[in-house]
Length: 112
Ligand SMILES: [Zn+2]
Image (cartoon, rainbow, N blue to C red; front, top):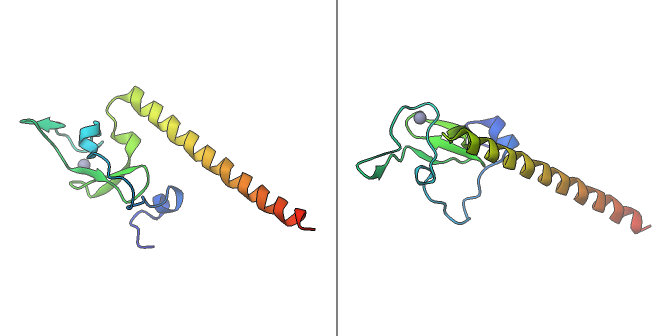
């Protein structure tokens, strides 16, 4: 794996590139947590943020850094809500994996 952030790649995985394209992050209200700039000027959005190669991350072309998308939400209450949704999705995914593991084990025993 040639990913720059091995920890992110291992934990959240790489974003699928064959899916439906999203709107640009700036149009959804995301803002680089490090750069100081206006989200839009003269009616044009600042497009420094792009969807990262990692799930749930955004990439800033100025910083050349990937940030968890929840850190790119200026509205702290919305950020907390999205963080909790991400945790829930991770827990649901973990639960689904352990259920399929139990089903596989059950399948082994049912053949006897
Ligand atoms: Zn930046």
